[in-house]
Length: 303
Image (cartoon, rainbow, N blue to C red; front, side, top):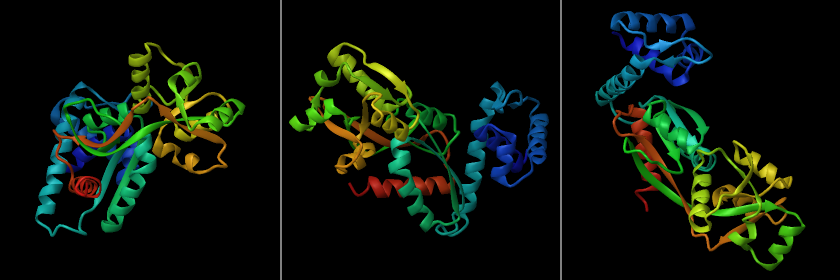
């Protein structure tokens, strides 16, 4: 068993593709295929299901994957321990992030880290909080940024808190309400059409659970849109209203000429918490461990 075989296998599972794994490692697709076939022959089991559009691990592949990740990362940490720690750090960090951190936290973090460690590159994938947590648990990413976590396999670090606000069209109805107050109660909006991100969105879960607990009802969801900018465009066109984190609505809140209105939610004491998460059962690569420490120092140590 060789490290190049393990690396090929890990990358195919992470990228769900032989061709994408080849691109990420600057190898040819036949080389990747040869490495994995050799590994499968040595182990005597099928590791990758090659049928369909995506390459998926078999049952045996899923079991072997976590061992392979730990072996590779442990080797890298051992090699780094024999060198001077600092600018020598290199490699790729796989970031999984939900929408708010992906738009307002992660870019600044990776830019600052890359300035200190220019030999580190990043692969960032944005989805919802559910998928972020699942990907980190499955070792499909190194570090995750999410609006919540619900699994003991994850180690989490609270980064910051953000309150929820309501975004509405700038129409006659809401302009009249704005002339009275910059706050709206649940009673003011309970019958509105709501635009949300997917069900795995932490903002959506937080607000829908609050309404169910306090109002004993469900909201009328008119559309599900998989991006914040898409939600804003739908609100602007008058399709409905949406509840967003303040960070996502800050630009519109501060711009009196914006095409949407932002209201505080009166009587709704809800805050979003944003976390950095990683798999506590997996050894992080030196680059990922250094990035984790960088985030902790930037957001947590100085609180």
